[in-house]
Image (cartoon, rainbow, N blue to C red; front, side, top):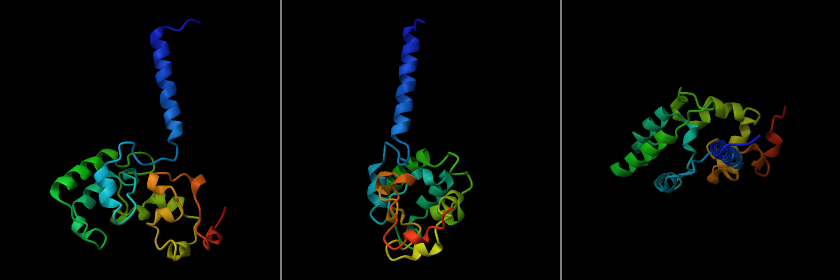
Length: 166
């Protein structure tokens, strides 16, 4: 069978896309990570992947930074506008994140988060090296790079026995 040049081009494009999606499996941060988002948000906590929440949650969060979960995280208007636009364009739209925002717009109260962590004993969140469910990096040691792959989880010392198993 003889392939026409445009068929070869389509096949090459498809193979490139397939290879890049394989290389990113487990990676949840966008390739075009906004430096302002990274700098501002990671000054206090992990800069969570924007896909962890629906757009409505990010809108409310960015509109109330003066009372951001008990802290004043206010930013100048231009930075708020820039980060807000970026979050909107990268908000969760896939099967993990529904359009229904989680209670209080908390990632840790999202149905997908609770489902993924259902086998952990609730005491793990209170362990000194974990402190809360929002501390993803305690177990997801590559979370700062957007890697939440289950194969890369390292339970902190003293917590591994708190896995409820199958």
